[in-house]
Length: 308
Image (cartoon, rainbow, N blue to C red; front, top):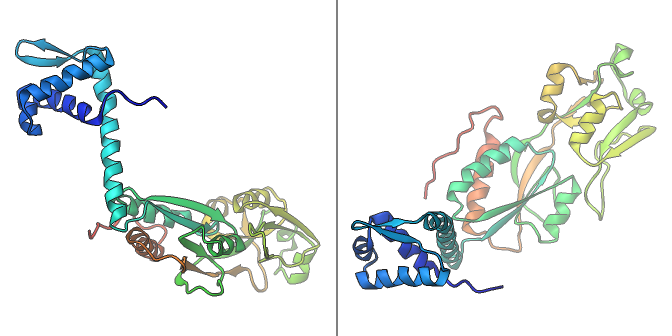
């Protein structure tokens, strides 16, 4: 890669000349001599081979090319400053990245609110979000490639903080054969129908959570695909209520009148990587996840004020 001919300091000097109206004013702001500022800008123009400023009376005015380059340079200088700030925060123990793995059944709206509140407090820390299903979350956490995990399973060897429950509802299309029975549906009725099951993304010990041993089973890769299949009359499934509220409201899906087990509400947990100390950014994100998990899903989309 070709090394840049112009330094960040030179771009900062040009910005000061333009922003403060001249070489003398820039020299005062930068605590440098006027001759040093003039030389820096002149050297820039020589290195770039493009005139950046022209003298109009007593003022230094940008040329057209200078205006274009200055606009681009502002973002460059800003990014360099953010990089230096991030290095400083990392020196103080602030993480560059938090890796979060979440079961796909957990309400995305809660995560959006927590991450929105996290952004102004993040100090440049990124969040790498990964979605898994059932034991896939556990495997990612055990492999040590996640700092935080949200799962509806109890993971042996980890102490999870309790979050809210997620309600799963047994549903089918209104035209499905199970609804045409016009009575309560029992286990034997379900066994004779096709069940749509979402594939466990774990590789080691995938689980058939929710499968009732129906004669026919279609396995799909996501909850969204399962909802689409069932809405179109292809079998029945237990799906998170928060994901299918619109379909239930508009009549594309209808809860099955089961004599028992028509809904289940597993408790979700927030786990942290026990082999890695929790940095300040991770701790802030943990508190925000807990805060917005406890709020109603239809609460106003408002982030709490930073306490920093």
